[in-house]
Image (spheres, rainbow, N blue to C red):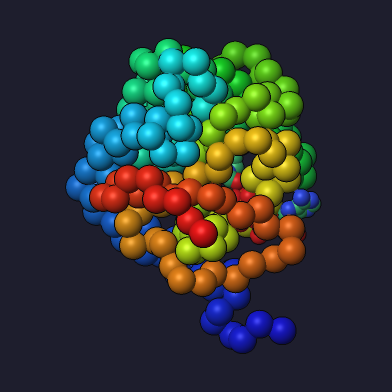
Length: 200
Ligand SMILES: Nc1nc2c(c(=O)[nH]1)N(C=O)[C@@H](CNc1ccc(C(=O)N[C@@H](CCC(=O)O)C(=O)O)cc1)CN2
Ligand SMILES: Nc1ncnc2c1ncn2[C@@H]1O[C@H](COP(=O)(O)OP(=O)(O)OP(=O)(O)O)[C@@H](O)[C@H]1O
């Protein structure tokens, strides 16, 4: 039994509360900075030019850090960008769709935006060079805290060759978060004030 106040649920509640309290200014400046920084993925987790790369991203939902500017900047390099489509039913591996521009988006399950077009299948993430993973927080070992449905933990096993990058605010990298056996660790963190940092 975990000590009261230190389990995943408590961390999730604390970090969500802190995010909701972030000002519009902080959210907007984080999005601008992430858009400006995203090209550094080439010298960081990607390790080669974006032009021929496939990036699995996601559509940030306030107060998550970032916005479609970050995705548009990736598309502008020539990279192929895919984003999740959440199917009906209980949590399952994420399906994916090609992201081209914000004009193609519709609001779907959980209020998340997704491309209106056809899904490309759950195996598409296997072709990604880098997966940008949403997180409420991440620790120095790469343990990631998500929203708690396990969508990404069910998905990332199919992305065995990809570099995994958690995207968080600058004050959301911790020494140690709670970890479960099924959690998939990430190798990198991307923060608006700091850029890409490898994790041990
Ligand atoms: N922008 C974004 N897209 C994403 C994720 C994410 O964290 N962020 N996901 C990462 O896995 C997946 C969706 N994950 C979700 C996990 C839990 C709940 C959920 O429990 N929703 C509650 C309301 C509480 C809440 O909003 O968190 C509900 O609708 O009952 C929703 C989505 C796929 N796409
Ligand atoms: N690969 C998996 N197969 C089956 N169940 C899983 C798998 N990974 C996680 N789960 C289950 O999903 C639930 C939520 O997992 P967890 O708390 O790690 O979610 P999370 O990583 O915070 O959420 P998300 O990935 O949606 O952002 C747990 O009950 C966990 O046991």
